Image (cartoon, rainbow, N blue to C red; front, side):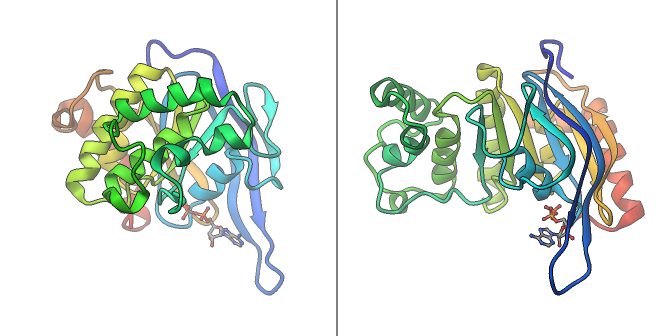
Length: 262
Ligand code: ADP
């Protein structure tokens, strides 16, 4: 947990989720999950496919509303999307007929917030992530990395306290992905946001997070929560430092036992 972290913002208590499809056997996607995330903290969730990462994110995003146990943000029970939570998906899902700025402004329209005030904010955010000058372009005119940055702006535009990111950089090439990781840390450090980030990549998790939640499948459980003892301002080179290697080794050990992470 970072030195500057505040009080608990996200709380998950005895959380279980069983999918009960009509034509097949039930699946225990999450089994008795306990997790507290502090205000301002960066949490990464890692684990192989099927360990319940997306289910947990969908519960926190208010997209899956039937579950056992308790999940709260700022003390409010999550039973639908909350305005204090922004979500970035695996693909940027920008609307092709809208300009980048119009896409970024979607949450403002949906939540009927002050358009003028938030247009200023949208422009500032786009400048921060290197999209200044691209406001009037259409998604097809931008690279994959730029589209994903627009998706991040859209998730942040209404100034949510929490940002949920479900494998947001999985579709990008390795170089762009590293760049986006550095960008994301920079944005996060300047924003005070609380981030929960799903990834298949152990190095990505260690580079980004204060703590890495290691999940294992069938049923989806938290195997260990690994603290990452790297400086707040860090570079990719820190992954090869003693603390970086220690965290990576500890996380990887779980998957050597179960199966390769895919
Ligand atoms: P991950 O994101 O770690 O790959 P998921 O949360 O997508 O894991 O899935 C966890 C388990 O729940 C898997 O076994 C998956 O098949 C099952 N599952 C996910 N969504 C549904 C659903 N809508 N209906 C039935 N089973 C599901």
